[in-house]
Image 1 (cartoon, helix red, strand yellow):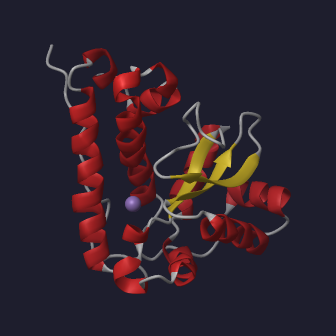
Image 2 (image 1 turned 135 degrees about the horizontal axis):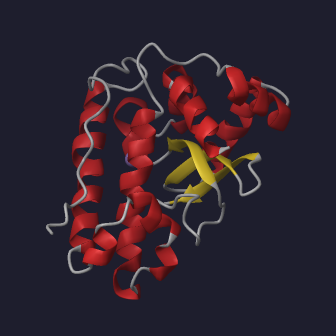
Length: 210
Ligand code: MN
């Protein structure tokens, strides 16, 4: 059997659909070059390892400590990069923003007191992540909602991650996510990002995590 390599998923909306909060050029480069490079380099890393190449990306990340040591860091960087960005595109949308509803809204209130306090805490996680990385809302192994951050392209699914659980929302705070429009002003990017948060999708991930 031929094993299909990983593929760059198409954006679920037009590259200018998130304007003015996320500009079209950033989307084009972020998706078409950065995410594509993660996919290409993941395929290269796994080319000689068909048993790993045929697994779903989430299984690869969950079992990252079992990946052969010679390619493990490449798979952490590029497998994480591939999955993190796939989640990121899905967690945004045009005519989005606002607040979650239903079970996720209730769980956020229970865990963080209010949506406003949740926003403050996730923003702080993104702002205090030094260098490149991600801020996360995730469900830990007991199902409790947590906020944290990871360096580089680490993902809470990885058994070597500082924070472990099921990722619901990942906010990309690499400079490549915001530099063209916001330059060094990460806080302005994070503020604007709430306007494109796709709570229907994030809420559906929460329903699946339970
Ligand atoms: Mn990115």
